[in-house]
Length: 88
Image (cartoon, rainbow, N blue to C red):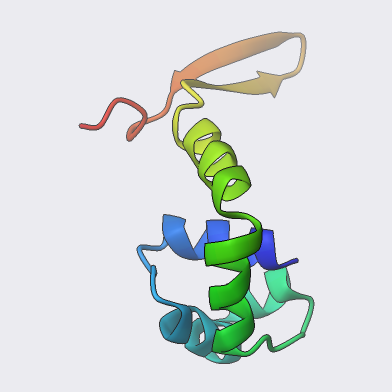
């Protein structure tokens, strides 16, 4: 659950543990991702810095570098390029 919260917060340009904890209390999407749990900023900071730092960096990098999104409609699939995938 905390990994999802941290990754979602980074995609929303929220990087500090106190701001992430505030978003979980106030933002509907963050509440849904957290499963109605309210982690303390200390817990978020501990997970972000000690336990999952390399794993979160790897997952977050993979999410941002995912180059193409496929949308299937009926029999065929349309290929749509992500807008922010190349750092534009």
